[in-house]
Image (cartoon, rainbow, N blue to C red; front, side, top):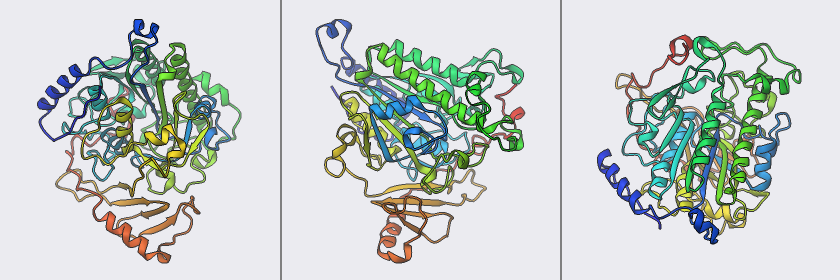
Amino acid sequence: MSVSIPWRPTTALLFATLLSALLAATACTGAPTPDERALGVEPTQPNLVFIMADDLGYAHLGSYGGEIIRTPRIDRLAEEGMRFTQAYSGASVCAPSRSVLMTGKHVGHTSVRGNTGGIPIIPEDVTVGEVLQSAGYTTGLFGKWGLGDFDTTGVPWEQGFDEFFGYLHQVHAHFYYPYFLWDNGEQFLLEGNEGGAREQYTHDVITERALDFVRRNQEGPFFLYLAYTIPHTELLVPEDSFAEYEGQFEEPDPYVSPNGHYADQPMPRTAFAAMVTRMDRDVGRVMDLLSELGIDENTIVIFTSDNGGQRGGGTNIDFFQGNRPLRGAKGNLYEGGIRVPAIARWPGKIEAGAVNEHAWSFQDVMPTMAELAGATAPDGIDGISFVPALIDSAAVGSDQQQHEFLYWESGGVQISDQEQPSELRQAVRMGDWKAVIPEEGAPLELYDLATDIGETTDVADQHPEIVEIIRAYIATARTAPRIYDAEEATYSYRREETGYIR
């Protein structure tokens, strides 16, 4: 049974009442009981697992051409599933990208467009979690949220997640050894991390809680959103992973954190590679558990990154060639800032070893998940389901609906009514054409991605008709962002002043 939620902005109370009724109406959906399984009853809804790395570049993985960092389990995911070569994040930085993912609206329409760390999504937003709850799914988020700190409208337990464990504020997520994480609305103290000590690595704690969620909900259907913080700076990893690469790289000068925000790292290349490989190991643990429980054939797993690899912050994007062959990196709107690895696996449904060129972006995740779950995404979103591309790689260009335009922006955000909006930068993809306005007021640059994936040659002067079409679209592509509360949107850059280290 599927349920449609035609969304109209209303009060949080009215939505909560509607959601409760919908959940009651869909209680009969989901996986069969153990007795039904014994009789051969097939599940009607797949479990949904969405794993997202933080600042992982397009080519850090072996399956995308990486030759330095070992990622055997994620590479195996690609061998057993489908590898997308033209998948895009929602934005070039963390919070807006996650807002696009959750709301199904591109960054010119979504609620959170600033990357300060304290900006919440609003009660009127309908999230992926809420859509899946309406279809009878148990929803769990483990890791980094970044769309509303404690005591705001954006907390995940009020935005569609039955369980949340991890970081609320994205600056909290900069630290791998804080003294607490959030367990829904309660602080979960990490013993041994007080005073800057390093006993409990948060990535490990988060992984264990995610695995426990799967075990407890194996009867399904469930939605697991596993939002890892690796490999975002700070560059720290336990010794058992660090030793795996120690002595293999000629290290540059030690990484010294600006403003004392992150931990200093005397061996940044070793630490970065070890972090990625540790995450790879734990993606493998998720896959092993699905197999052990006998539910992997009824579980679709998608792995991706929230934006492109970071050039600064000690992460050595050039040494590891993590964004090759793309231009740019996290924070800008060239392909290296927004094109991301994306792998999907669903045995018997998704062709093993397939390579798919369908161009999709994070706003497409909501309608895709909704279709897989038998639900209906809300009205007014920008996303298009890519289920046809998942199920049949030959569907691209036929059954799979294509975007006429894909849109990204950064900046243009006004923190308080006493300030001017920050400088707006914009990018558009139309077919194989990619337009970038790298600075506000700068000429529009045009690239043909079919022949110039590295965006090396600006051909705007040669195609004025294409420039005109894209400029006309840009003029209509965004709504004005709301003004954010200055107190909510500020945070400290110093470890001793964040409140997360004590």
